[in-house]
Image 1 (spheres, rainbow, N blue to C red):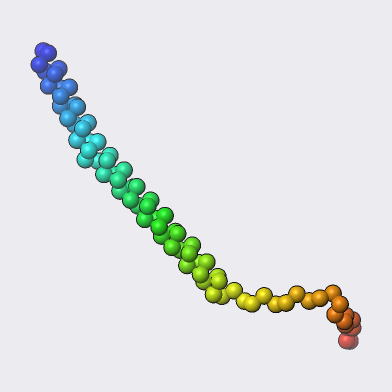
Image 2 (spheres, one colour):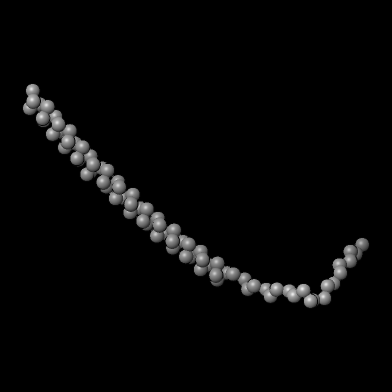
Length: 77
C-alpha cells in the first residue's frame, strides 16, 4: 500500500510542478511585460500631450495696468 501512496504523492507533486511552470509563471511574465508596455505608452502619451500644449498655448496677453482710463458703459435703448 505504501507504494501506491508514494506514487500518488509523486504524481501530485509532478502535476503541481507542471501547473506552476506551464501556467502560473507564463501568466506572471506576460502580465509584467504588459504592465511595462502600458507604462511606456502612458509616458509617451503624457510627453506628446505636453508637447501639444506647449505648441498650442496662446501667447499670454499683457496684464492691463490699473492706471488706464476707465470708460463707463451706457445702455442704449
